[in-house]
Length: 146
Image 1 (cartoon, rainbow, N blue to C red):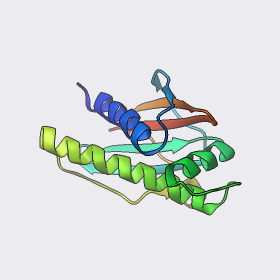
Image 2 (image 1 turned 45 degrees about the horizontal axis):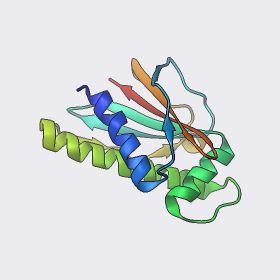
Image 3 (image 1 turned 90 degrees about the vertical axis):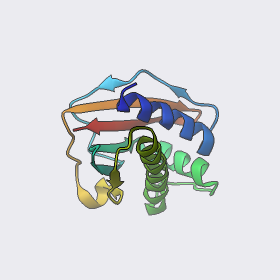
Image 4 (image 1 turned 45 degrees about the vertical axis):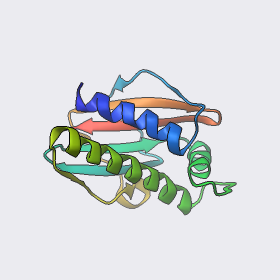
């Protein structure tokens, strides 16, 4: 099983575990770029190097953050990005622990960033987007492997 496949399978597991059991993951697409608006990204460096990110419309991202955190959020504000980054960090951390245990791969995470603070993110050559449908809309998860 490829690392991309492991990452995406674990993503679905973690979304079910920490956000919502009622999700539908759509087929993964290969892309050259992602929209510049409303994304959170985190780098993975070391034996396995990649970039993970997520993006959605502001209200969808707000609803995602509210479901993950169990905090009532009515509108998009700064805490939404922080909560989305927290989920991404949690998922990526669990993925790297499993990768380390199963394949003896040593990698670390960079701090999550928001495009509001860093501008558009640079992608690697192999970039995949997996749209995940929730009852409130679609969140797109990205894995860009070096």
